[in-house]
Image 1 (cartoon, rainbow over the protein chains, first blue to last red):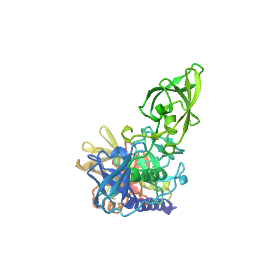
Image 2 (image 1 turned 45 degrees about the vertical axis):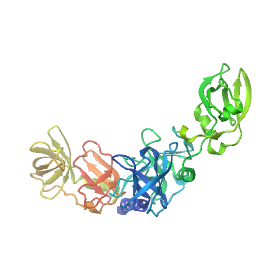
Image 3 (image 1 turned 60 degrees about the horizontal axis):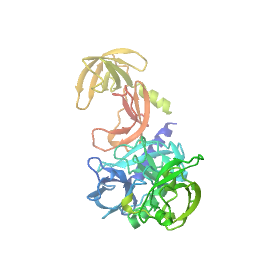
Image 4 (image 1 turned 180 degrees about the vertical axis):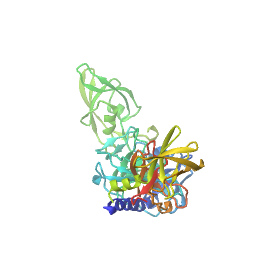
Length: 295
Length: 142
């Protein structure tokens, strides 16, 4: 029995050593730097909310070297930002499928503050759930409540399993109280979009909406405004229309509308069921890409 | 050694320090009855020390370093107190399991940041009042 605790201790310290090369410090705000993950050679991801400037960013990689970085793009919705290193950082994080993560799985959060090496906190995964939408409108493939201390400077760092493999990116910017982990699958998707376009595409129909209840008890969203030249106006939607369903799904809040307007819907036909003057009508709308300035 | 045995072993090398308004914990440092605690735990010139068996003894505060928050106490008849095994903090690694032992109990966690040569270490352990002055030990009880 002597060895059981020592074995666990050695395994955890070893997991930190294995995860360490992927964890960097990101100098993109005053005072305490945030953490980041060397996702693939020369590409670092960090949390969007801790990156407070778009220029003069440097990254401290394993070994203590400081490398200048440029911002490739940000996505506030998933709280991710992607940086390109201007040299060095020839390493790619080893990731693990979030399917293997269950409540009770032992995990470590890793962060880096600068030249002091990597820092760790330890705990068990407290909750795992399905896909969810953040308050900033981003789609995240899996809910992971890591159950570890997200210390100041830990946002943007990695959640690793007991073999040092990266489960995802920890952030305190998407939830109140304890942080959440953005799983590797979501990170990979957002990294590809940000590297190729500089932003994450989202669908848009150009309406201002407010929840209402109709005299028959049905709930929907009343159209308060229409974007000039927007897809909804072009399709014949009018101010005062009450939107009941979009793409076949009931919409009782704007979140439900957002979830029907993912990037895959851009340029396709979506049917909106509307109450106009007491009568139900169906209108086909073709979502466009949301202009970047409106995010 | 089981976790319970490890904690029991460390608790025998830990004392409760009662002094002035409050108190905390202390580590038995050698066979001569020398106790190390925090300066903020040991106020005044004398303190009372309670060992794991509940025996109360009077201790004299011989040195206090407020900058490092350390104080040295000497228990007059303290030769029977078992001293803690002192480790080398330069050999700690981030992620290693550690336990904090004090008079209210024990709590486990991991090393947060380990920087060889630095005069302190940080641990990811939730400390409660009363742990101040107590032991931080590795999985081998050192």
